[in-house]
Image (cartoon, rainbow, N blue to C red; front, side, top):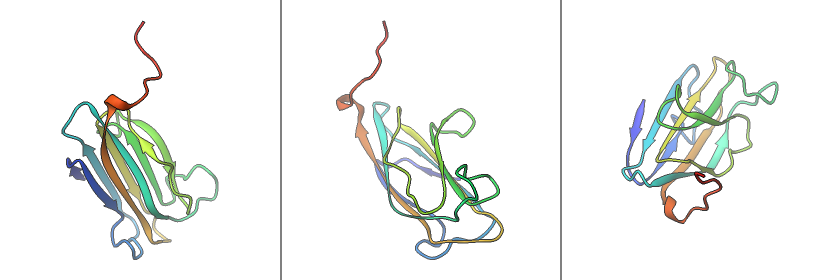
Length: 130
């Protein structure tokens, strides 16, 4: 588990830009210092093992992103594998969790992602209390 609290940073798979090892699980937890900021994450490189189907199953390498500080109470924003990078990510709050798991056979180059703190005061609100 790696805890990050800066207003910006970079997350990379182990050994990036060289192949990541087999049979690992890494968890990065980002918590911005300001409760009014949100996390913006974008990927500059993404190359994981492809899945046999579109689900990026737990038997293969995958990266899963959660809006929240824990996997158990966070909302999954998607599970990703193969070479198609995740879209631009914005959280609803100031916390984000990234989980990377590699399987026992194939390894690839991995990923590199940058995150930044964005003030939520300028964001468009889609819903409001009635």
